[in-house]
Length: 265
Image 1 (tube, helix red, strand yellow):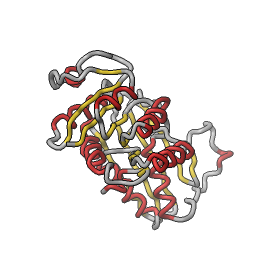
Image 2 (cartoon, helix red, strand yellow):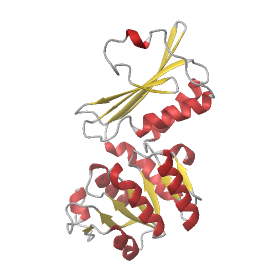
Image 3 (tube, one colour):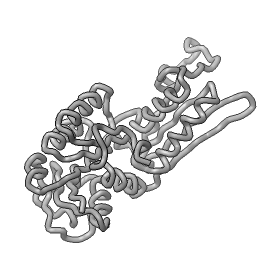
């Protein structure tokens, strides 16, 4: 059995992870950590009945006392880096879905993994379909000179652009080996500042934030007489659980830091 701690267990994603881990025959939930609803039963919060596991707000104590081997982290960008570091220092492999990571943060986490000989997985998106969308977009990037990314998320998402959009752009640019070309519309002629979105090596990224959305992204390629659109929609947070469970199953067999779920498929 893989013993699991869920960090951010009272959040929307955390509750889904609690359900998925509890139902998995090869996993056992041993701890739940959050800064809210401390002392309440994790299972009742997740809506699956009493589990006998109380929410704790002391991450280090929860990890060391519960016997967790893997910790799934879905909290807030302001806390996730320190949470992941604490996991590694306690000898627990973190599986992180919170976005907002910088290259420097990933570099430091990778060095910490090597120093403590503890593996970690950080993934901008755990939906299998989203990962495939990213891989397909990277392949198409080799053949089209013009492309733009539109990502759409719920209005409570705290970072923009999304980690998925940034990772997609990185994969596309890496596969292409050169920047994308700019359209003929000159920047000085644009009457509304920033209307064209953010620019990453010639690749425009647009972020939409609206209530009612969950997580959606499309990559649009334009060529002579043709348009190719690759789109993925997560209609509910349960769509991320197969990828989370896959990462939990595989992380202990890995070495160092693995960035991106595509590396586990």
